[in-house]
Image (cartoon, rainbow over all chains, first blue to last red):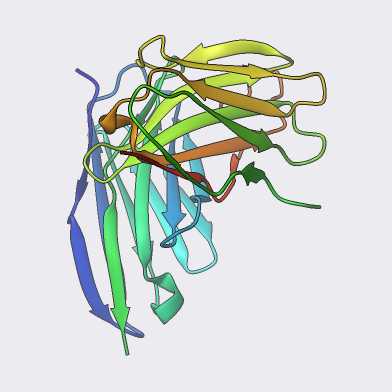
Length: 110
Length: 116
């Protein structure tokens, strides 16, 4: 069964600190993996899209990694800001269907 | 460029009724996808339309249907509403090129539906 598991479910960090969110998947075949940021009350915003051949991709302070062998991805946030408080959703595309994780809720506190 | 717009933003219906939600994609985008988001299930894919044709479909019952017009605007219809249909319905647009699947999708703010 195709599954996408994200951890932790929620996370609280101090402003300025770094953090890493995890995404493990069992989806097969694999087309691409996406990370989205969703602020409360808004639609998701795409952060990165990675294909099989890409093992790291950055978007400002966000860096995503992909290990297609172990079927793991991570999203690293550097020097967190209050505006990073949001839900982060990992999505794995099999080429036939999109498989969604349930998200990690991140709270950045002053 | 204007972003993806969805109307209405909020809606309250009762069980058994039907509802139609509307989505206007970013100008020039030809692909529109619909998603349902609930606290328990997270985001789930409903269907995708490209050039007025349904290109992909998720695992939802036939009560959920959609269509796309020649101007790429899309509507989603849910008939015989159930309490469990209460959710945030999001639409996303992309240019919908030949592969389509590695493109960035741009989401609208969603329509929050409450079924009583």
